[in-house]
Image (cartoon, rainbow, N blue to C red; front, side):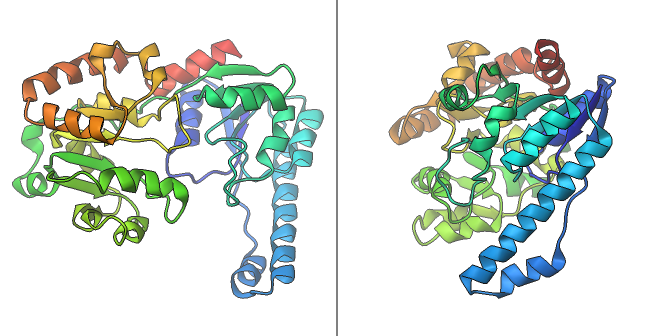
Length: 349
């Protein structure tokens, strides 16, 4: 089949992982080329007068959608897979469906009706034109069902890339790396900069007293230092390479796993990535985890005090951590690679 994707540079890599898996499964894929408008971008950045600035933004949106639609119509796919909204207008999505007659699939990575003004305001109005939704979060089912007539919702949690995440020989970790990475609690992930989302991760990590906490991520973490002073010592710098991330997951006593606070009942693929490296993790409470793991195979926390109690309980019990790590690894090793999970949803469409 010919499968098209929008241009996407999201660092989480969902789209790239699905696309690579589809190629391995024998499908032809096409990722749209990025669209750039340097003169308009310069106008938007420099001009503060809102009527002109807003006009520039509108023109850029229109040009982006026109360019996007032309690429899709030229390729004429059998399937179009979008990641959330991608800035597409309802008219563009409708035109893709009507003119290509392709199967329309949407991977729902964010709350479609998120009130944050920086989110894609077109997204909820495009839902009506999709046939199938890959949705990890049960709370969003209601929104999809109310905005789209007879949608097919497939519960899809993603997976892990076995070439990037695998157990390592801890003897390969140098003394310098061990000093850099060893800690009671680690976290690797985005800060969400100044958004309200970012206050969630920062607030939890910034209130873990009397623990050796280390954080790797973007520079947006620095914004929270004045609100949670402990974060300044904890913040280690930019995101780690995959090689260093494997080492971190392996030797950090506890890898704290927190998705975006938009996620209420589900989780992100980081669960599989840490498990694939045989790292121990404590995960923000998720009912969906129990569709995969037994309660004895996974450790979650319900609130800040519960998290502190569990960190203190597990951090000095290497044998118990090892037992849980082995159980999680065994459960996900074969079935939860991106390729296997992509193959599974393709059989359901």
